[in-house]
Length: 177
Image (cartoon, rainbow, N blue to C red):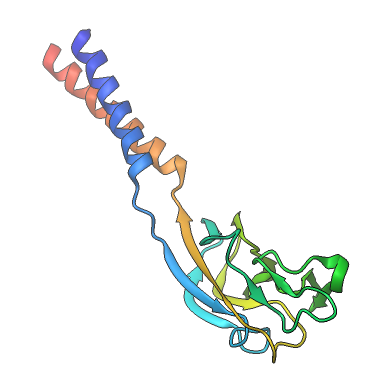
């Protein structure tokens, strides 16, 4: 019985280690506030699968600033969450509304969606495009660096662990006979 418990404990430990050490398939993109606008978004070449969950996170999210032009009469500097709407309100386009200066994603299947300084989401499908959300972008400046990761699915790891437990049980049964 001690061998079986040790094997089970080992299988659980290996499964946990795999879950924690699964290599991130991070892809990094630099989104430019001037070049990557609504009219010319950054085409990442990354095709999202609606069955997967994705993590979007801006590097140095609290300190990386981009600008929607001059700070006159009100501040137009912001993080990827966009400019405080009390200054300029929000911008709506094609049924989507977000703060001016927000980091926004787009797929042909889902349309526009807010990324901001980071989010985790699923159900997104199609070619991922990234952009600075603004109606006039000729005076924008700055960049945001975005990491996109496919989040490992816990069910797959659980099934792997169950398979290892089954193999250990079969081995135990074979040794007994």
